[in-house]
Length: 346
Image (cartoon, rainbow, N blue to C red):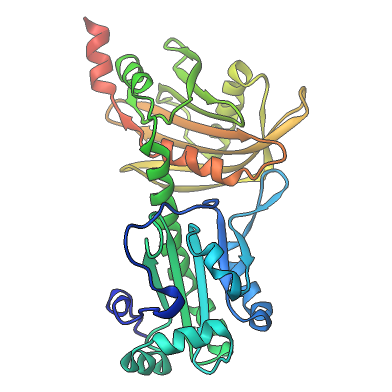
């Protein structure tokens, strides 16, 4: 089935209440909240498939949805039209306000494509505000909308998630990037990394091969740990958990990974074979805990193992967006081994 994207953008012009012009304001609201506009009765049937896409639950250690879906009646659209994430759902046979607006705004050829099943979801960036993601979902009837959400859910989610990370990264580094700390890291350690403002080095050791970057209110930490590639040890999730726990004894005051709440997978990190762990940690002495992620990869050119470990401690707050910010920092990591080795020889 063919899905139409950019070709429909110029055809789907929401005149009346949806058309915008002039200088656009900055989008507002939380990055992990999505505002949905559709018929109130239809929402009862759309909610579950949308939650399957955007509302998966993760242990933090309490359960937390990846994104928060919030339905709003269309009469309040003006209030939310500048928010970061907006979804509008309409049906060709619908009599509700959202459906009527979309029906009146579709060109005849677009209606034909929707009826054939060739058009369903249309993402639009920066439509009414800068840094905004608007998603139009349109189908002949409610049953077709629901089935399309399941059929094309992975593509819808992938596009939204890419836009989410792109906008979050732009927001993080648009203001007050910590260039001074970045320069210090580049001079002293075998890697470079982009650092958001307000981070500081909590502790470091070239001898032990680690540097701990931290930011408070709430507590967010990213630690890079490096060591020679062991000759007799395979890098496995078991080894990573043990090494992470050993490192935590030095710098995290005895934190340990909660293994039954942690999952791992193999993947490629910047061209290197790697493992990724995601789960929860706890501190038995302090009776605290939270979520963490860990990326460990092998640099065979230099016979080294690098571990990028990051965690959040934010009681009473949603934690996943903070963890995603740390992930963005982790993906700015670049090896700087040659420069460091050359400096050590001088």
